[in-house]
Image 1: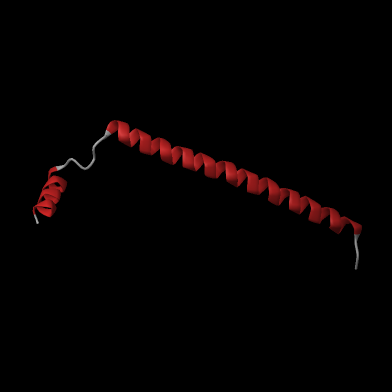
Image 2: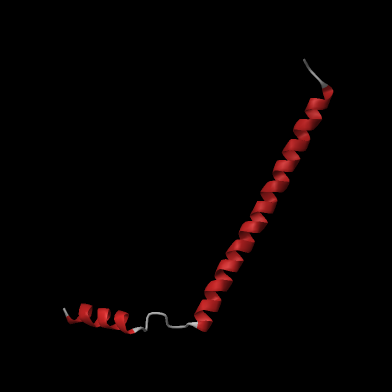
Length: 65
């Protein structure tokens, strides 16, 4: 039942798994970078998103009570 080629196959599978894990880590870091970059752009383009009238009225009604 023992075949010498099967051991090598197991080693290559482990190596492939390790490569895939590292690639996913890089992709995840890139996703975080893109996410924070988009948040930064949003802050630059639209710096005070909660200044619309409904939100201000809501805050005024809350503080009045």
